[in-house]
Image 1: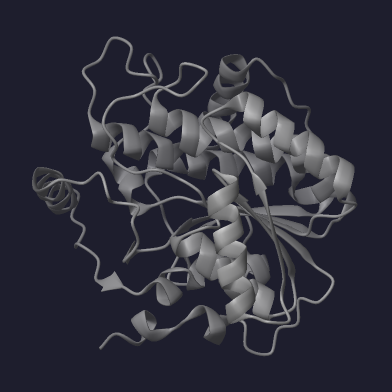
Image 2 (image 1 turned 90 degrees about the horizontal axis):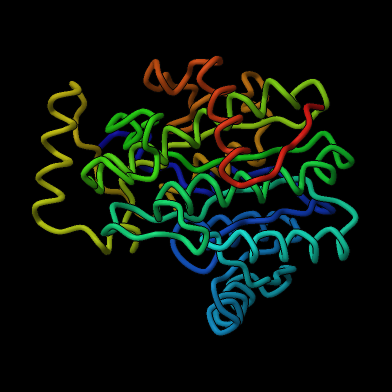
Length: 308
């Protein structure tokens, strides 16, 4: 068996002490986010997760505390599909925390039927990218004040399905394709990372984008048999092999590696897979397209964010 598929979050954190560090994880109630919270909390970090409801947040924190009895876990309710919710959360967080060492933008949705966020954006682009765009930017003053600090954005090899659809990112005129929409949102996560590093790397705030692999979580709950066939066909056309399905503690190892390892600091601004620096598509790694997406995102959310 490929040894890369046996490395877990605990392996990555062996010998690392995160005591005193504050970590914020979006979507920490299930899957990769919850496992990342458990692992980082077990290494001593104070971990705050976001949840879509009080009930889910309370349940997740109870489970995490049971797994790591001496851990420091808490939750805040936030809905990435509502910019009002994101802004309200960031106001609360900034008022109640004086440092933030790591922001793990983990939450996301995948290949869902067509829908819109509360603000009228296509659901995947609005949730996976624009919600995090506002969240990260509003918390950047705290990340800068806490530097050296890290931003880790969850992307996917699914970004090969589509670049940014510049003339119609919200599928207002084009026929909706759930895989194209997902691919666009994951490309956006990488371009956001590229521009974040350009703007804030010199200020000690470093960023990475992560492909976790194909992981056994409920992220693909909207997938149908036809969707899996479409995914396999796209992978074949792009010359990629379908990845091996892995457990969540292996799938989360790369994002945890980005959050905590010294090795990740060798090449900030990178796209990572299997705890290694990897090349994304050309359109996801283009600094000019990264700048263009930033401007478009500011226009869409109605908010401008200054350079460092």
